[in-house]
Each structure stands twice: as structure tokens, then as C-alpha cells.
Length: 346
Ligand code: HEC
Ligand code: HEC
Image (cartoon, rainbow, N blue to C red; front, side, top):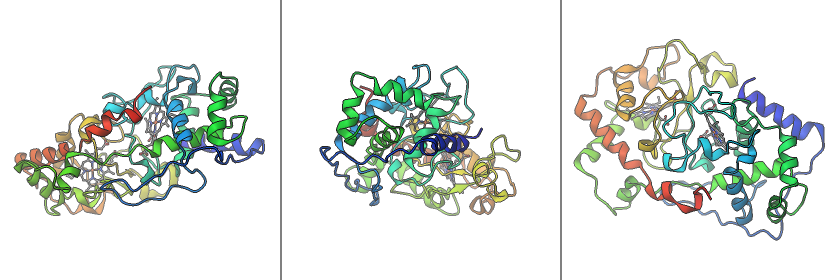
């Protein structure tokens, strides 16, 4: 079953079989003031899951708790490691609880509050339903939700924490998803060297400046078309970048069934890109130079190749220009975020 299949199945279990009350926020919980992050656009928090300090704290505990997996060996944090921009420790594919291997590269987790589609194929459309994916996926955490709720409800600490955050008991799956989503929404990264440069706090080297200009230059890097410079560094669209002419993974097509979506994947942010190797949905590239080479000479002319690339000249970048672009990409690392104790494993 596809990941979205699992999500659908999960919601049938949650909402279909028994009528469950949608938890509100406990009136005793303290609202978390989500303010527009520096250098990022304004955003709205969904009104059906207001953020509270209690909810966020609980979400963090759950994010790092191995209890969430079927045999209590994996937490979300096992495949999403803070120092690597919350990707999986230089692994091409992640191992699930039974040592089974997935087929996609773990995605970075930050600035998720801006996303409207989750996973490489956009198979989940809000952060709350996204959480259900890895928990129930048999090659990831392979957890039976009823069993998890039983464990949580009979746990020494969890019931009181959930009560504080959501005001009612027993603990429901809805509350679990909401708490984790609240924590995820606090994970903001916008204090890289690039951000400091934009605020005139630091200077760029000549190579970094050249790289930034090439990134924007439509005749050269033309990266800006999809990974828009500044802000979140993504257009939030799905694009076919010509990685393959024969597809092992059909990407967005799996969700929409539209032939025009074959081989399209979510445009990832380029923030923290220097620490999230390997790259692309299947982790095929290990270095940033390889990524830039792909856009310069590597891409395949396929039917769905993005028009931006289809009109790009192969070999338009020389070796110096490639290394300048890489120098610029290296300015997007936000060490404050990667070391922020607020997100650290407890
Ligand atoms: C076994 C490793 C593994 C575990 C455990 C895991 N993830 Fe993931 N995560 C991945 C992979 C791989 C992807 C990309 C999957 C895809 O696109 O199909 C991903 C994608 C995501 C995304 C999508 C990001 C985006 O930009 O679209 C979010 C959010 C996420 N995971 C959060 C979580 C949370 C929360 C948990 C715990 C409940 C969790 N993950 C557990 C490996 C894992
Ligand atoms: C047509 C839109 C488009 C253009 C132009 C583009 N990218 Fe991408 N980029 C994407 C998409 C979509 C992906 C994900 C592709 C996949 O995994 O199948 C991606 C992936 C990447 C990745 C890997 C990210 C990760 O988390 O694994 C890097 C690095 C990258 N691009 C850098 C660049 C650079 C540098 C340029 C300019 C030379 C550029 N991109 C131009 C859309 C684009």
C-alpha cells in the first residue's frame, strides 16, 4: 500500500470506526505566541490546532520517544537528526523497525509551518495527517495505533501531560498527531550566514557573491526559478528535474494519477543543504557539486522535464562557476538551528 494509502487507512481507523471527539485546547494551557520569523514570510497557524507551550513540550517528548514504534526501537528522531537538518545521518535510505529499508531519502524538517504538501510526492496535505504516515508505515515505525494509545493511556507520565495540553482524557490519536505537529511548527530555521548577510551583519566572500549571482542568473544557474532566493528557498511546487528517463519512483503521479505528474517531486528548501547529504528523493548524490553538475549537464530530456530546464543550455556553467554556486549554498547553514537546545533530544 502506498504511504497515502496508509494515511487513508489510518483515518478510517481513527474517524471511521468510533466517533471520537476532536480535542480542543485545554483552557489551562498557555498559548504559544507564534510570531513571524526573521527573514521569513508571515504565516497562519491552523485554527484547529492552536499552539501551546504544553502541547509543544509534549510533542517534543513524543518526537523523541521510541514508544511510538511497533517494537519500541525507533523514534521520529531516529531518522530525523537535528545536526543533519533533521535528516538521517548521511544515509541514502532509512531503516525501519525490522531493518527493512525504505526507498526514499529522509527529508529535512524545518520551516514546515509553510508547507502545504508533505513527503517527496506531497502525499499528505497537513502536518497533522503527515505524522500518521511514519507511525503506521510497516517499513518505518509499523505501529498499531490502538496499541500505542493503550500504552500511552497506561503510561506513568503521558496522561497528565496530555490532560495539560488538551484538557481531556483518554489520550486519542488526534491528540498525538496534534502535539507532534505543534512541536514541528516551532522548528524554524532562518539564521544562516545568508540571513545575516541580508541583514548587513556579515560580509560574503567574492566566491559567495558570485555564487549568489549565478544562482539567480537565468542564463546560468537559474536555481532561483524553483528554489527562490531568500525566504524558504522553495516554490512549494512539484517539478521534474530530469533525474531519470525511466522511473523507479513516479513521484507526484502516485498521488494524482496524472500522466503529467510522472517524475515530479516536491521542490525542497535549500536551507541547511550542506548538512543534509545525500541528496534528491532517492539520495543518489553525495555532494553538492554533483547536484549542480546535474543541472548543468546531467539532466535527461524527458517528456515531463520542467520547462525551465528544457530551455537551459547544457554545459552553461564552467568548473569555477559550479564551485561558486556551491560556496553560496554553503552560506545557507544555520548553526543556531542545528544546535538549538529547544529541539535537542532530551
Ligand atoms: C524509518 C525512518 C523514519 C522515521 C522513523 C520517521 N521518518 Fe519522517 N521521513 C522519513 C522519510 C524517508 C521521509 C520521506 C518519505 C517520502 O517522501 O515518502 C520522511 C518525511 C517526513 C516529513 C515530510 C517533510 C516534508 O518536507 O515534506 C515529515 C514532516 C516527517 N517525516 C516527520 C516525521 C515524524 C513526526 C516522525 C515520527 C512520528 C517521523 N517522521 C518518523 C523517514 C522517517
Ligand atoms: C525546475 C525547478 C528546479 C530548478 C531550476 C532547480 N531545482 Fe534543485 N530541486 C528541484 C526539485 C524538484 C528537487 C527534488 C528533486 C528530486 O529529488 O527528485 C531539487 C533538489 C535539489 C537539491 C537536493 C535537495 C535535497 O534535499 O536533497 C539541491 C542541492 C538542489 N536542488 C540545488 C539546485 C541548484 C544549485 C540549482 C541551480 C543550479 C537548482 N537546484 C535548480 C527543483 C529545481
